[in-house]
Image (cartoon, rainbow, N blue to C red; front, side, top):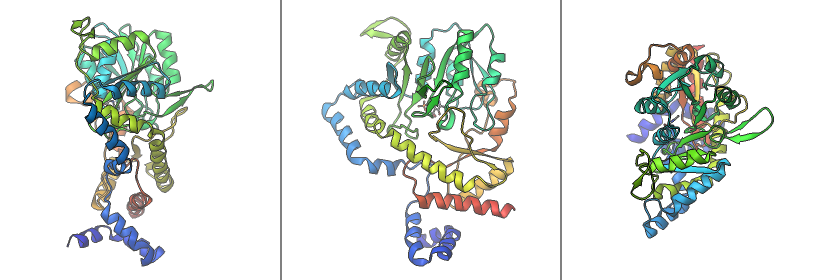
Length: 409
Ligand SMILES: Cc1ncc(COP(=O)(O)O)c(C=O)c1O
C-alpha cells in the first residue's frame, strides 16, 4: 500500500519522465526518488559520505577522553583562525554565546546602541537586550536581503557603539561602506557570520577577505544545519584584535585566565572536544561543501529565473554566495502560500526565513516600521539546500515549482 501512496504522490513527475525518456530510464529515477525523500537539508547523506573519517575522529577523542578543552579544540581554533587569515579564533558553545561574548568583550556602557538589520535571526537582538544594550534596526536591500548601509549613518547617535551586519543566507554584507562608516564614527564592527562561513568579499582595491575576517570581531555558529556544522551545538569568535581575543577567551571561561582567579564577569561557554574533532574533519571539506551548495543554487536559478512574480536571489556586490539558504521572493503573500502548499503536496519541504521583523517580536517590540523588512517577511521563502542534493531531487523540486507557475498563467 505504501509504495502505491508514494507513486501516487510522485505521479506527475513520473509521467513527464515516461514521456521524455521512456520507462527504461525513468524507473530507476522513480525508485531513487521514492527511496530518498527531499529534506530541507540531508545531514545523514553527508555523514555517510565521510563516515570513516568522522567516526575515526570521534573514536580518537573517546580513546583520549579529553572531552573538555582537549587537543582537538586547540587544533581546531588554530585551523579556524588560519582559514580566516586572522590571528585568533576562540571556540565556544554556540553562535548566540559567541555574540554575547563578543559584545561583553567590548565592555560597552549600559544603553549603548547597536545598529543591526531588522530582517534577521534573533540572536543579536536577544543578546543586546540581555546585556542592557539597545538594538537599533536598519532596513535591508530588497534584492540581496542584506543591511542597507545607506540608512546606517542617519541612525548613528552619541550612544552608538557598534554596527553589527549579518551575512544573511550566505552573502557578505556591504563591508567596505560599513567599515568606512565605522572608522568615521569610531565604532566597533561585529560581523554575525553564522550563515556565511567560507564566503569572500572583494574590496574596491582588489583585496579579498573571508567573511568574518573584516570587522573588529566576528561570530559564527556550528549548529548542525550551518555550512560548517557539528553534531550538536558549537560556535566561535574570530578577531585579529589581541585585546578583544584575550577578553573573549577569559569571558568564555568564567572570566579567568588563571584557574580560580576571576578577573572579569564571564560565563561558561565551551565547544566540547568531540564537536571540535568533527569540525576539524569538516573544515577541510568546507570549500567542497560550498561548491556543492553553489551548484544546487545554480540549478534553481536556471530553472526558476524566468517566471514572472518569482525573484531569484540577487548577488551582492563584492561578495561570493555560499548559499546557507536559497531564499527567493514572490510578488504576493498569496503566491507564497500557494507555492508552499503545492510543494508540500508533493512531499517537498520549504521554510520561511523570517516570518516576522525583529521589532515586531513580542520579546523586543519597538514601534518602528521598515518597509523592505516587512515586504520580505510576507513574501520570502526558502527551498531545500545543502550538500548531497542529487540532480533527481533538484529536477523534482524545480519541476513541481514550474508546474505550479504554469497553472497560474
Ligand atoms: C544569523 C545567525 N546568528 C546567530 C545564530 C545563533 O547560532 P546558534 O544557534 O549556534 O546559537 C544563528 C543560528 O541560527 C544565525 O542564523
